[in-house]
Amino acid sequence: MLNQIQKASAFHALHVRGKPVLLLNIWDAGSARAIAAGGAAAIATGSWSVAAANGFADGERLPFDLAIDNLRRIVAAVDLPVTIDIERGYGSSPDTVAASVRRTIEAGAVGCNIEDSLAENGTLRGVDEQAARIRAARTVADDFKIPYFINARTDVFFQPGVKHDAGAIEAALTRANAYAAAGADGLFVPGLADGPLIARLASASPLPLNIMAGANTPTPMQLAEFGVARISHGPGPFRMAMKMLEDISRNTYAGVLQ
Image 1 (cartoon, rainbow, N blue to C red):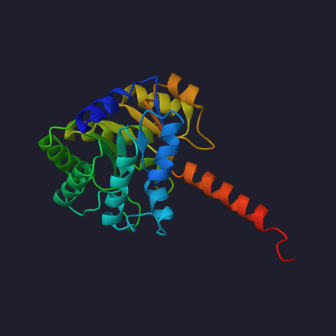
Image 2: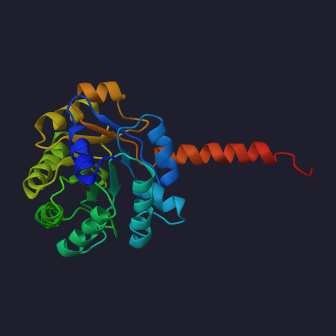
Image 3: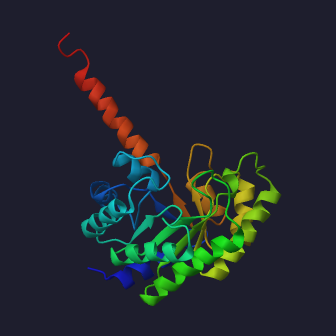
């Protein structure tokens, strides 16, 4: 059994530019065990999937106590590094974000995702404001002397009317530089799917780049060639699993009592 520090170090080592770690985001202990049995090197929760599996909408509507209880069960179920998606940090201030991160570490996580948009309308926080939140998270993680992986998510490409062009890449890079200086370990840019832009960002970013796979994103092999270091799948696995279960249900009950 690896201890938490060893797991955190191993998770860091998986982030190699050009040889990305593949993360099929899970939602509970059972799905974590299934993914682990398939050969995963690490486990990552997805906030959308965890919320949906427990009857909640995404956007920090899932009670944080429930998210932490779920995390504990996942950590106990697998002997792999586990990182948790805590959305915007479940806190309005750097101190409350730090308190949230503290609880994830105490529950056994080796890293987290923290977003830079606002829950109420999806607009971006100021760069300095978000950097302060990341810095607070880094401080509490360092207090535990654990190489906790802070994956700083920027929602630049989710802003209304944003053009997927060089200007948006520069905006993402501005945030990447500030977040790196604040102590982030990775840069997560969901919504970005254009190959040349991904390659440009991966090359210029001070942090290893995480891309979320989707119907319009390049293949994992192509993303590796672009220099991506982490590929996650967001709600995709949960939706596929639930669709399969629904199909089984329809086939099972079709024609019953008719």
